[in-house]
Image (cartoon, rainbow, N blue to C red; front, side, top):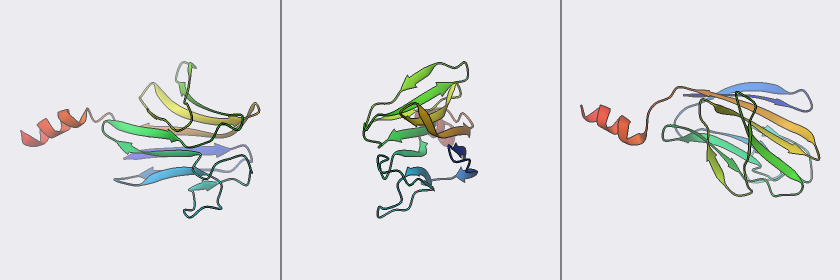
Length: 129
């Protein structure tokens, strides 16, 4: 299980638990799929951020087009790793915060908590034992 906690620039906040194929999304609400957290901003993509479970831990996908936006993974010690447009990045116990900012303003901050479950191979071996 993954726990996703978020806070937007407008002061909205919330928490949701993801199980199985569940996903958490942030983006504009004018698409075919309504995001978990929507924003009314013309430069934000419909699926700007997607967080879901994958293997040993969660993955964040940056669907946000450039448009001056930055998506960053932030570690517990404050180091920053930028995520390129159209790519995904694995989260870890050390890098478990995601921020989407535009023109220097942080639009959403997302904290992700999860248990380390080992790799897929390690879990399959444990199931076979």
